[in-house]
Image 1 (cartoon, one colour):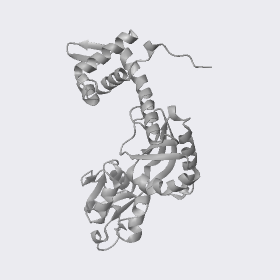
Image 2 (tube, helix red, strand yellow):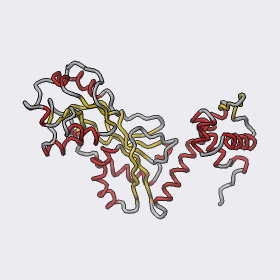
Image 3 (spheres, one colour):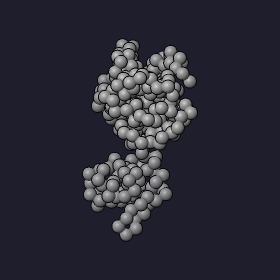
Image 4 (cartoon, helix red, strand yellow):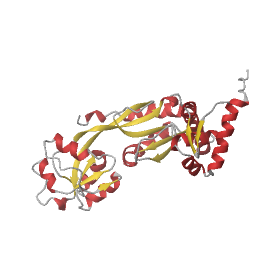
Length: 305
């Protein structure tokens, strides 16, 4: 039995829907036009067509400025999720026309050090599911970004999403051997005399770590880096002390290129999670991947709490 078709009136053009969603997100016709590579007048025409088709005023026009009506803002929020789903489905079809595919956003260092070495095992068990990886430094907006799931750092709570704990984070202060002529420091407070290297995604990491060790908090002075790969190289070359996750520092510590500056591993406030939107819970490829990756978290309970 065929599913009933919807009246054409309630199936607006993709161009009109994208114009409305972009205007709602940017707040100005200029921003929407730039994103869509259109003129402002073209955006205005698309919105006018949409209003006429639906028979509802979506835009409030004040002189040369346009802003969303309450009805328009609600409608934009609802279609945003639909547009993101269409984008995910289209990208998956493009990448894997004959097989199941999963579009996964990953944090660069965690993805490369923890996930990628395990993916050969997943591929051997699930040859029909292809995992496509893209790196992101910040949390994914599933309403706007075409991803089925993401690996993110945080407390496990993201709006309208579900999550699975993969690994808790344990931090170690490390530096090049030449930075400490006498070996590891006798106290955490002694670190304040050395240059401290900061990571942009954890701006309060040093302050939290020092406070937990009863050491003075010097503030946030010091060089900043956007990725763990670059801050690790900075530490190796003697630019200062870096507070690194143990799974990133372990290879350099084993090779002697880095040494522990003080103490031992310390449990961080955040952890790494597999995160997916509630609307994507029944995705078959995601279900297979989620069941598999849950088995990879076993053995992590030995980490310091």
